[in-house]
Length: 531
Image 1: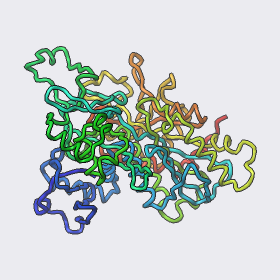
Image 2: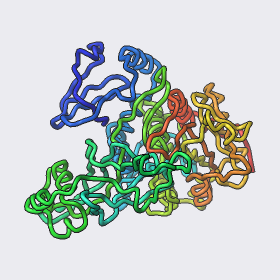
Image 3: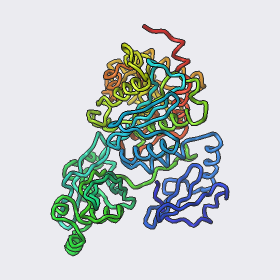
Image 4: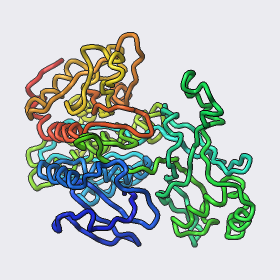
């Protein structure tokens, strides 16, 4: 959750019906319609990104609540999901709360029409699906796919480093980040830790240190006089090294005496291990291994004159992941939602998209295809007929949801003049003749027809011919599984920065478009015959 300083409640003065206080661990949390506040003892200023006009914030909250906005819930999700592990764990929590049944890939599945299921892999990727009550063998899957990872810094296996007078952390760059934006930020660590238990077994625990632990300081302009003329060009190995603390031999000795083993001291600073052990309530010696990201501690929040923007890290691509998750949950939350559905509604959230997807938990693995095959086989309840899986895939449709490049007001010429997506104007359909995106004329038409049916706006994007084009998991899945695919995304600015921006209205439009896709695609698809 977002980490904020303690606030005098009288200064906020929310309506009594909107203020719900409850206890969780040793912290008190207050939940407002579109603003989640958590109040631990050590934290940061809550409204440094918000307008000082608290009444205006509350008015926006009332408005969002009345029109069914999911923006407040997205902020909660972003503030919870510092890493791909936390994003997956939060999705898992919401699925379980909604009544989805947790499956295990290592065990036999028992599925039935009308059922809702999911499984995780590596606690960084997830597949969830609901089966239409009118499903029959060979019917298709309607899938929205996104990814849980974002460019970041990751601790090296041996992170302990020291420079004159300082303790530092060795890090690796993950993905294609705008690394200069990571300098002079209040940073910390979060991720996964493997612990040894009293009986000698090992367990996985997620950890998040919410207070600022780290800083990557820039060099003073007095020592780099030409930086504004020549540009800031840090060496990613020697200059992008977070500062942990000043070197203190007494503290090193004290931490060692508290239980740091010789190997852990050699691999990671005892001070870091001590902070982790306190957060996890375990002995330092019980920490077997770490898998930690460096994270920005500034909370995700609303911004802009009218609070029309979302300022946050990891919008690429957690905004898409959350909209997909919420659309699936809400499309089958009420009795009867699946009563007339003959397809299977699915989301697939993959890890490692930012580095090519070639991993066991990435879109390059056959995770989704294996899940489809198992679902078809399990629901057949008898010998699967010839080509049942292949027929199901041919009737399926995939929405590859990844954030899009909104036109930058200061760099308008970076966009092709007729394809300049704007904020607050709806989802962007991505096209590329060289198949960097998987959109075709047919898939774009079908997806836009869903939007047209529900009066939702869409936009088009094509990269300039004299510029390179990024890619998504869309072509990977389309080619690997053979499924009709459209690439789309919410327009944003500052993509791959430590701090990104998108439009608040676009989030709600994306959610409505995805939900409409689940609820109406079957009928739309039947109106078009191709091949």
